[in-house]
Image (tube, rainbow, N blue to C red; front, side, top):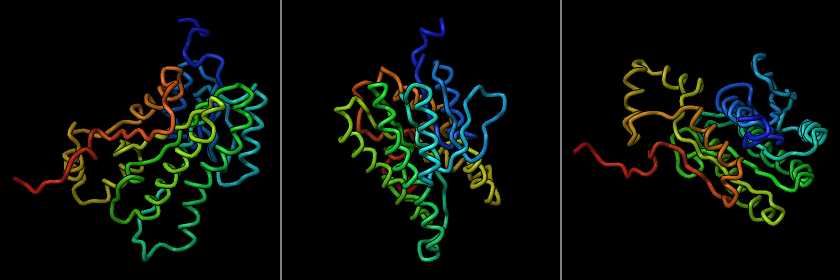
Length: 253
């Protein structure tokens, strides 16, 4: 397939938080499909990747504005993936105001700022796909994750509003709500238990597929939402969790 025949040829994409893990996998997938990818992160991506790197703090408006100026210099913006985010595992009563505000600044303000300043740049191309990375915890709950779950619930709500307000401008907005994905962060969570192998096996049993997701699974869905194949998809929260949240819990029978 020639470069111009690739599904995202001549399109510019920004992926935030793409120096590693899910964000990096999404950036790689979009680049493989022909997109010009701008990685926006506080740390650079691997030097082996053919990305445009822009240092960016998504919680800082001036930093985000510089990012969108760069996209404009490339003729506009077609795809924005709001992936940058941080986690917090603390009981609500022990969550400090500083921790709460830092998490909300990155997970919620960052999505707001990037979407807000991406919109006029997307109008230059006459189209746009904004893809927010939410979480199944924006729909349900896990212990010790009150701040994180609240932030992802806000991301889901923002997704619907952006879709409603800008669909008529041919700018779509959807979110991906991943379940348990094989990432360094989740690996660290598993390894904190005395028997990590037993913990991993128990977590797999929560899923009808009896396996955990990969970063490539998320990247493939992000590619679909970025492509013309999803032209009628707008305002949706796509749960990608191997069926975990489809299960009603039962006692051992």
